[in-house]
Image (cartoon, rainbow, N blue to C red; front, side, top):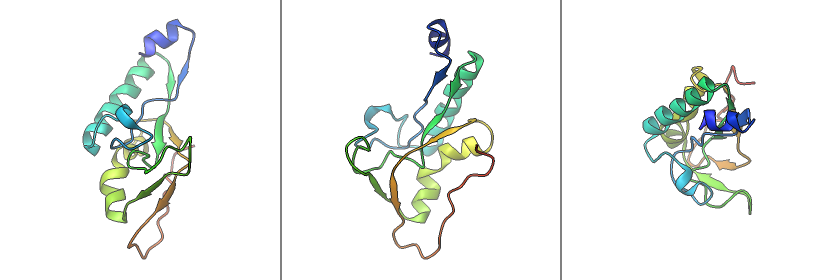
Length: 128
């Protein structure tokens, strides 16, 4: 895909989608429900873009996959507790933190952390 984009003089692609799950807005654009598979596939896609010298951005941090509505229509909500966020929502984006995916696009979604008493700082150091 990266080589095809470059042949068309396109040097940036806001892809891949590394959301886990098949929510209303993501549909069949997700690599799946398995966070490890999504992380591996997203990393492979980014490496392919890099090999073609095409800038890419993993999206939609912090996981738009389980959202209840399409952000183009209304404000989406994903009702995940802290454990689910850590185990399901963030692994594909943690690949970015480790340097495997160089950048991420932040989604305009609202997260409600249910049954969580602590505040969570979702800032990932090293992302610009």
